[in-house]
Image (cartoon, rainbow, N blue to C red; front, side, top):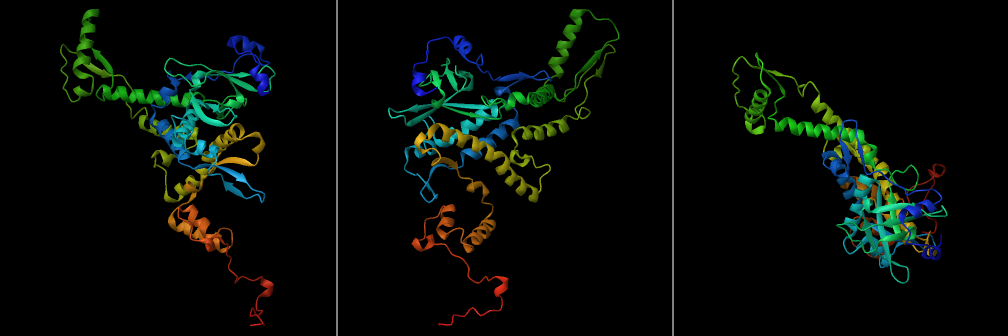
Length: 417
């Protein structure tokens, strides 16, 4: 569907009618919550109350939001240059919308992807078709539809009671940034929270159990046994009196006095027998697996050593950060780069900041690349946020004291000197 065909598309029909017109039927709906076998409803709001989930999302969102993103262009010699003064570069790298700077915008992208599996932002364009603002839209306010010809998507954005978007209604695909997480159909991403509902449900249940345990003064529940027969109202009054005087953290340490031959019999499984702490420790690793975040980044150092942390950090960049930034770069390149410049201009994150290592490792790395003519001294200074040292430092150098094995022993003295 072309842009002019879309403008002629009837935008006044009900969503149900449009869904029936679609070659694939109804709107695509991505579930935003699930009920786990532990009996807990797992949703975004419930999930972020789990400390490990909160920490994993912070690690991913803040790490990627901290990376510089720039618009590049390939020149005739296939060398890349940063388009520092280009409007698109400033839009994405500095101020994507009136409400968000670049850091906040990228941070929201990752937060939405980690919780719901999808991020939406309406592209506002000027009269010339150039992007001038990117307006994030909450996932709950967006419905995704397959176009009548089955070749594309369009979106229905509805204003909520608390949020009024600058643009709403029918939004064509070319005007919607839609970044997806892991997807089974290529249309909408799957929510990690819903997909891992069983794991997170256990964590929620464990947190509630811990809260209830300490609320009741770190004491187990049990049975008050009376040798006689109690009337219902007497039993109720006795239970309420016991809970008032002995339940809750404020009643810890109080001495219970049992009369008339009564005795207390504990009936709950003690936490040490239920392996409560071990289960909570295991849940940290299980949740880290969902987001593919190394345990040490959520401050779990139970199995960390100096050597394996360094390896995990590299693995984190390669297998966790890189796929996320590729998703973002691909969508920006597809929706924001003009058609006549696709393939020549592109957005790219700079990963150097989190790959630099310690000072000694960086120095050895730079020295090697300068000595074999791969980098110039000024390129090294640029990576270290230092000003250029002059034109001579733009040149490339190579050590000249290396010879092929077949030339060993031959004189290297010039005869004309």
